[in-house]
Figure (cartoon, rainbow, N blue to C red):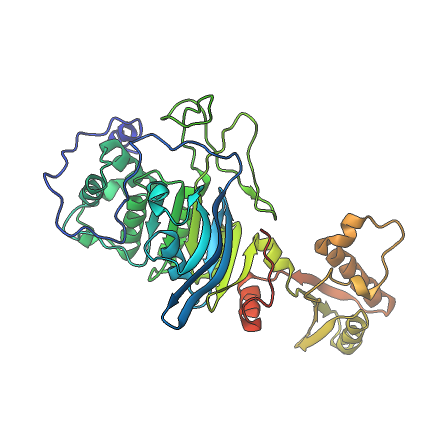
Length: 428
């Protein structure tokens, strides 16, 4: 790393003269909104608030209902994946939360401020909605300077910080027209970070990216959420005034009730909440600890990913040593109450989608703890033992017995196929 980069990280950035006047026509999609002075933060109002807590959110255009009666609750500190088919109302919902579209109905709060008064919370929000709009003949640094001046929050050190955070410090003086699509997306995220936001909203940030660009974007999003260690001084009345010695860390554990566990009593939790709208479900599964599924404008699920995955069917793959045993093995699995599929030299036993897997197949052993009965993973382990013992009792040698993990894509596909609202796993 170069010496100048180290200096910038210590706040010793080289002097940068702001443009006398920014280019006309600011790019609306990534323009930073007015925010607090550099290094300052709004008062901490609640130790465990929801970043977003809205009820009955709807949007109608004439007779067409785009979003219908959504109840959303996103915990502070969550990385929330917002997924649904094209036309499901994802972007419209995000636009309503950002004050870009007026809701037809809805009430609640965003960052503790009323949904109906977006000016009260937008200074603490950064967003990238749809494609980034940037000045192609300006450098990345000049783009950010122009946006910061327009927002009334210009500070050279802040610009250097966000450029480094998104990995563009080495190309900061290159014209944006020379950037790849992935670099432009990262620059747009840097613009959204200018206000040091408590809520970051990214709408389809991986659109149009190649596999390498998707991987880099995934790492960036994860990094933005996880290493949000923004030092601040917390006063006796709970207000946060400037940057000081108190360490702010992002709580990583999101429970089913939406609470976020911190990392110890000595740490002041003031995390960043990230909302990622995407149709790449494998990416969402890797980086998100809160999932929202919408379909045809209605809420189908919200809660931790485990709640969605555990509600669906799972599979156990069985492979006998001798092909002649396939029929008997399939019959044994069916006798345990499983749906059986045969393909080649494998038998696939499909576990029930609801209730603890295998609970109805046999009574629990005396003294089995209630916690084991209520845990689908424990029931799965018990069922694997049943299958193995049944095969052994009939002289069948198994060379493979393996549970298959249900993916978010499989659960999402099944959920949407059932119709919105059929499975309401709302953990809020």
